[in-house]
Image (cartoon, rainbow, N blue to C red; front, side, top):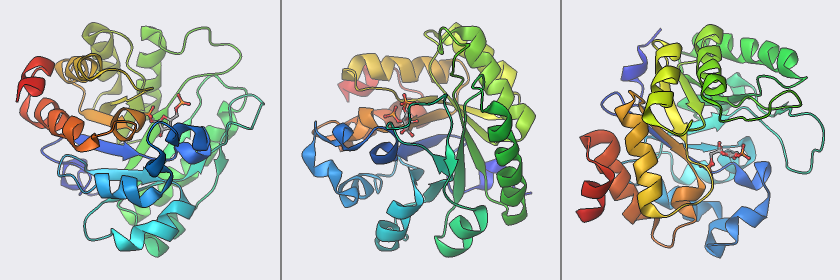
Length: 263
Ligand code: FBP
């Protein structure tokens, strides 16, 4: 198994995944703040920024757009996903096999959502098991979107819940755990400790102002997190390259939010 640090989606031990599976997960409404982002090419162009180590998309977008970007962008294929139209207990259909992602689409990494705590957790974990073992066969890293949610969960950002989410990623064999930010560097540290050798990255969330967003990323790095998987907080900005410059400083150069904004 190739060490995760040798993967093309890792730069100096850190990761910045630009996610754009929102057209499926949330619907086209997410593209309204910057209407040109409804065209996936616009976001692929943003992903050519040096700070971005991979772009996460669903199969259909990869098939249609990635061929024009394969020299400049690393592909992270999201293997499962669901629409906002689904009203049942949290669940996610497997939309792409590992073989198809790697051999036909050229994926450098794979992504899989696990809704721990959902009534569908057992099936999702079993689907993850197959994907994770197939990923090992192809020697490509597996990123778990570890998002506890469902009937029994009152607060999906509770520090204990986030630490549990990070631990699930370790226990089930992911290489990178993408978790929601639990509110403070101390809480994030618990998640990082629980994840052991798994790299923990923060999920971007809905768009906030530059300082608030960068401060969270700074807190994540301070806690031993290894970066970020972000969508709206980058491409819902009028100038996504500016925030990527700042993220590059915080994630790879250890700058504070203030320092990154002053540059
Ligand atoms: P954001 O940074 O925009 O939150 O994107 C990260 C992500 O995990 C996407 O991959 C996914 O589409 C979205 O968040 C799901 O958000 P939520 O689970 O909050 O609906």
